[in-house]
Length: 194
Image (cartoon, rainbow, N blue to C red; front, top):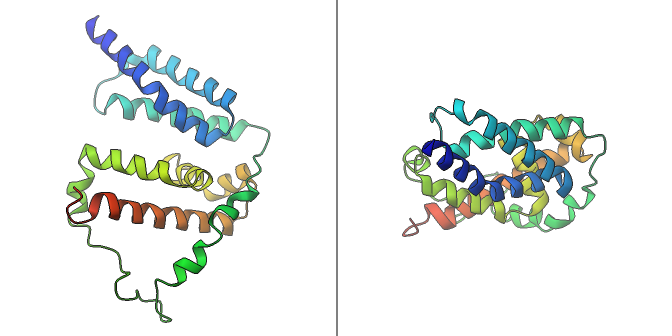
């Protein structure tokens, strides 16, 4: 019984994180609250089956992921995200200044050496930094990235949900990955930052 109480306390502590993630994805506070509530109910009712092969947070987020995908696929309204291009208008010109005409990196602009990424990925601290970098992305960019990379939605599903062209989606994903890389290099992989 004591383990059950600690699991319930752990679930309660995760609620703000899963609510923030749901709000980012759904852009609808009421629907996000409903999805989080469904997630918490599913987690509470299945807590006896939680085997501990993953962390409690990973297990709860996998439940949330399924609930979010269901909500995104069944929601009958689309979200207008035509402002996605506006938040990063200067990115293309800044990005072009990193490369020579032949597509190779200009001296001093190539990515930093990341050391042993496998070792770093195994560290809990890395994921905390990654989460902070993900939250640092512009809202719509982070949303598209999370839909593709965390929720595993296909590009055509993302485009239908957000009413954007696939080419725009790929550009947003490229920008998100570039910004995440820059943030991780600055906050995690940079010399003396670990």
